[in-house]
Image (cartoon, rainbow, N blue to C red; front, side, top):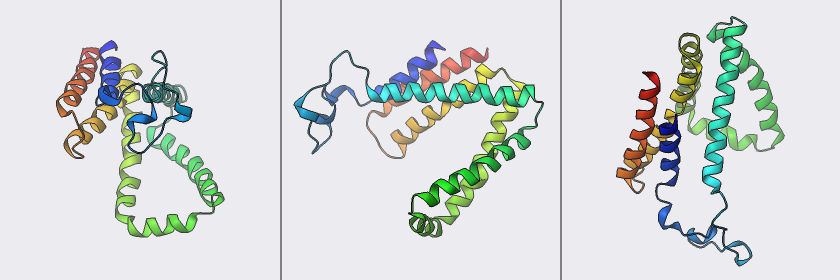
Length: 183
């Protein structure tokens, strides 16, 4: 687990070495808030939000495992139930923003991608729920963290972001930690 956490943190730190200690000064055209620099003891917001995301993933993975195992619910039924609750909630929130015309325009322009996402996203969730029924929850939760690795590699090779060697090395540490946990 230490290797996974260390690799995820390393991925988050790639390309931050030259940014300096002042938060917004490293962004072109930005000015620091009230001319103050960040304290060296303060936790980087990127790392903080990364850790909070990891905690959230672990928490909802544990909840999913409890629901599927304790209630003896099929993964498909659980996913459909969650979706039945989410769609009306998100629809109301979307309409409340009074920007639904913008959403309709984007939906018309990107309908193919939306259909693909609408099929693949629930399928991936069903696969995770199925994995929870046959594998230890800790391993499934760590496998979900592979998204960090995939995004980092996507950034390095598709978006041509900096430090591809460092990104691959940090990703290898995460993958190695997962392999060690699976043994």
